[in-house]
Length: 245
Image (cartoon, rainbow, N blue to C red; front, side, top):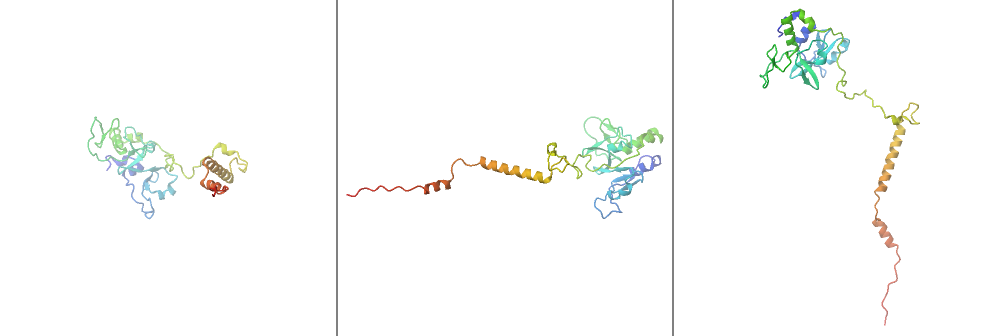
C-alpha cells in the first residue's frame, strides 16, 4: 500500500509502484522465461521478453529481483527520478534501488544510523530505503507541486544489450588477426592469409619440430641390434689345439 494519494502521481508511476512483477505472462504461458519483468512506461503495463516486438520504440524499464523484492538499476532510475539520499544496493556488480519499502528485520548493531520514513534503519548518509519512501517524503513536505521536481523528463529509455555491460564476448565479436599475418601472396588481394596457406605453414612447422626433436633425442650409445649384428659378422679364428705326442 502506498502511503500517499496516488492521484498526485503520473499514471505510469502509479502502475510501476503497484504492479506485481515476475508473474507468468498469460499470452506466452507455454514459452520459457515468460516472467513479466519489463515495464513499458508508454503503455503502463508489465510485459515479458516475448512481448517486446510492438514495444521496442517505447520507453522500457528492466525490473530485477533482489532478496525477493523488485528493484531497478540506479543508472536507469537516475534518468527518471531524483535519486539523492536513496540507499543503493549492489547485486551482480551493479547498483540497484528498491521500488517499495521492505520490512525491517532487526536494528543493526554498531554506530548510530538514519531512519527511513517507513522506520527502516539506514546507513549514513542515506535517508530513504526505496523510491516509494522518497516520493512519500516529497509529497508530505512539498505537496503535489514537489512531485514535478522529483521527476525528470526522460524521452528515451531502452533495455541494455545482452553482454554489453559485462564485457563478455558475443557471437558478433570478431578477433582481429595480427598485423604480421596480413602480408601474404595467397591473400587474394585482401591483405589476409588464406586458409590453405595457414594450414600448410602450420603443418610444415609441426614436421620440422618433430624432426628436430627426434634428432635431439637420438641416443648416444649404439643400439643392441647393431652390436649383435657386428658380432655375428666377425670371422671365427682357427682354434689353437695342443700338439699330439
